Length: 111
Image (cartoon, rainbow, N blue to C red):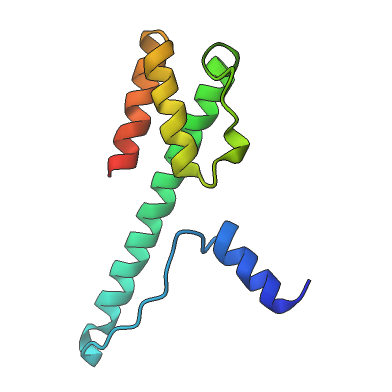
């Protein structure tokens, strides 16, 4: 695997997935503020993605056969699309707990 391929894979599915590079001009004395704010945004993004993945895993463990019987999740490109489809299926076909998991997933997507 070439370096270029490795970088591309890292940006598409690795730690840099869903992130973009931004260049800004700021005063020298405010540089640390911008860096700390960017670090906080990255951390928040990763935590949100982690919570969403946990909800997806929980939904699949509990309701895969009952609710997602005719849905092919492998055809969906990313976690956001998968979670939106799973949440809608849970809310339409599931019980009260499935509805709660679906609402939580949709709320996480809206943030």
